[in-house]
Length: 310
Image (cartoon, rainbow, N blue to C red; front, side):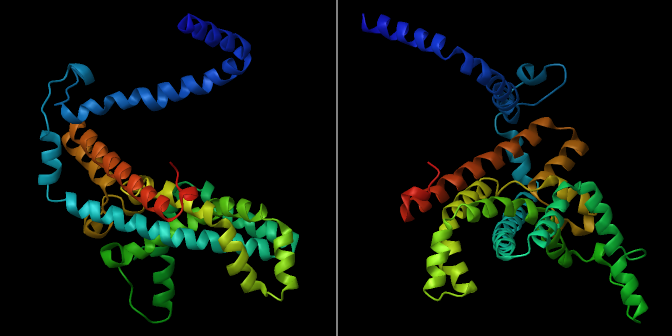
């Protein structure tokens, strides 16, 4: 009787909230079709894919795809590059985004603040293809803006595209430049949500601008910073393919300093047409990202349970 009553209660709730469920249905269907269903393709990582058999009809080959990746001699290099680049992007990006958000809130001129915010937000909408062209026009040996200035001052040209040591800084600059405006929006919203009476009390107590920032603003937005940090850590083993491919391209001279897991997988797919190996690399990335975010979330939970995601 209880089970029957439970089913009846469930059906009654379905009927009661049918309008809300219908409104929710498109989003649920979209997520299932485009987010969860494609995950079944993970089996390609354990198969020798061929066009005639497709995903489900191709023969199994165990861990051969993973062996090929690790025996290629590039697995350690691209994994190291991916992790180090993402650590730099997260740390420097978080610092600059918080700094920009604080800077914007401390500007008293409303018009100047809006103009500054718009100018910093604009690069986010520029395609990485356009950014790659901009980078070429800045760093090219023959046409680059920097080399023209150097030669006009009597110096010798700098071959940036054959100097791999310079590219970690170039990539870091363009990543921060393109994302700082968009990334600062979350922190700006968190700062705007702080009760103004807290700032008024700090001013009455004699706190100056810097004391208000470090004693009030930063501690109050710390939960937002930690949540965004955890979300960023979840992709620490995934490189920004658009950025690396469009800025570096197929310049083999720069690979030791700029090659990441995503670009290696793309070249492997194009050169060998091996979908299984590319799927294996993607699975390798996903497992490492899941493990990393789980560990970091656990450490954050030990520090303060309220800051953890789960």
